[in-house]
Length: 268
Image (cartoon, rainbow, N blue to C red; front, side, top):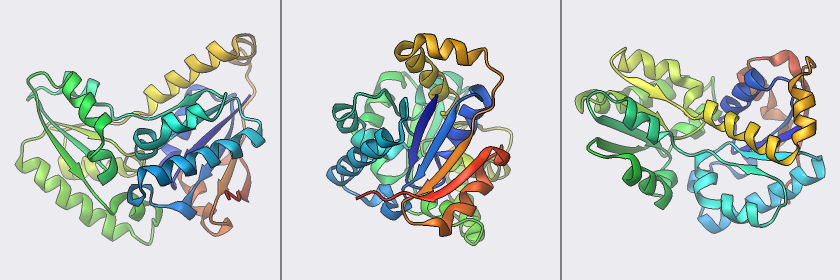
């Protein structure tokens, strides 16, 4: 069984790694849509049109489900994609619910791209689960894009995280929600700056669990057989920009030996 995963760059590989860990039998087609990056700088209409085209790409790939492994694309365009495909579509939402429950000081920060930070959906989730907690919504216009340029951008990424962390420490934040799938790739840098007094939450386990539920609903017999299988799935890495950037993608895949193909995906 094959599943498609899309992000604007390398960020969705945090989701791919989690899926491989929990559901290792799945074949995964990962699309880094770097020709259209960064998603955070695009309008909602642009993202909706782009995601519909990507849905068509995955349909031709013969996937059983699509994972939109990007917070920005999820809040801006996942409904448009669902309206234009019969495939199950799983999105990524900021993990604010567990953050508010976990925070001992009732002081939470949510770090996102500007589009996600300003989205109605994020603010709805905060309003739903905030209770008596204090919340700071923080946005970085550059961090996700700079992570895609790693390792050349390493010093810039470190400096950005240092500045963001200083603000959080000054505000006595004790729980951080990483509301962009790129950010967990450098989670260790946040941990170094914030120390043990701050819990860091990201959504990969929740997305994997939701994917399994959707596969069980849509393909009950097939998924039951595969859950008992010891076969290891393979990974195909695709880039809408060309092959130049695919070695960067491979570097973030935890089970790099499962990568069997790297190719250019033409998205019209």
